Amino acid sequence: MTDRIVLVTGGSKGIGLAAAQTFLDEGCRVLVCARSDPGGLPDGLIFHQCDVGDAASVRAMFAGVGNRLDVLVNNAGISGTNPMGADDGDETWDEILRINLTGTYLCAKAALPLLPDETGRIVNISSSLGISGSADQSAYCASKHGVIGFTRALALSLAPRGITVNAVCPSWVDTDMAARRYPELGIDAQAAAAGTPLGRIATPEDVAAAILFLASQGARHITGQIIPVDGGDSA
Image 1 (tube, rainbow, N blue to C red):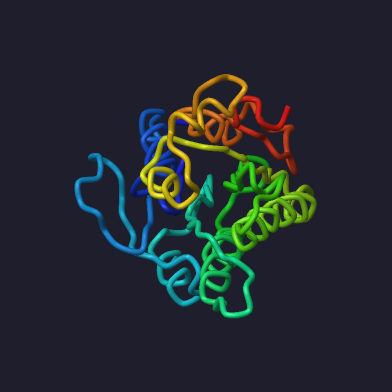
Image 2 (cartoon, helix red, strand yellow; image 1 turned 135 degrees about the vertical axis):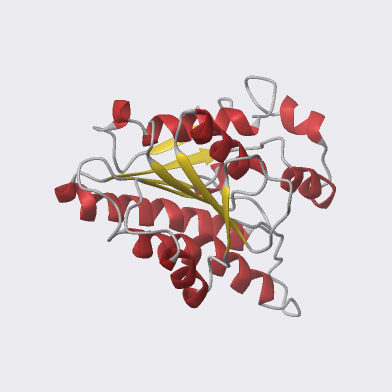
């Protein structure tokens, strides 16, 4: 992986930051983007401000990436509950689809001219809720199911170039996003862990390890695949 150029969207915290650090440790040149600069990023990471759901913002970021990109990790995403009551607005639906699904599409589209044949890699981050459903999480489920469909279609489109496209589907991960979601769903970290066959929730580094593998030469014959990192939830 030494000297490969990697872009991790949503790379300033959580899974994205763990993935960025993992690639950095492998000797890659790593770019990360987020809607705002959190400050205090590890030395060596190159930050770009970008709203992945906005086409102009994505174009501006990729203009600064250069003329080559080896690996794109489409990690940027948001979550939220959206009941389907008659009085509930559509703002949550619109925003979740814009970031999670349209953002994945826009960044992949911008990356395609930069990815080298045979060794280019795209790793999309879906979710265990891209495989199953959850009450009142229709926007999030729809967006992450969409990422899986997009992954499979793009993998077939890019197969003649030898570029692989895969998706990782984490369940609960020990991140700030998860901590914010627990109270909304009436659970806590212990309950989330107890509901997982392995009896614990994932660390960001668990997910980063799967991302690194899919980006590596060892995964060159894996494409269009959906890889759960869920402690056995989907078994």
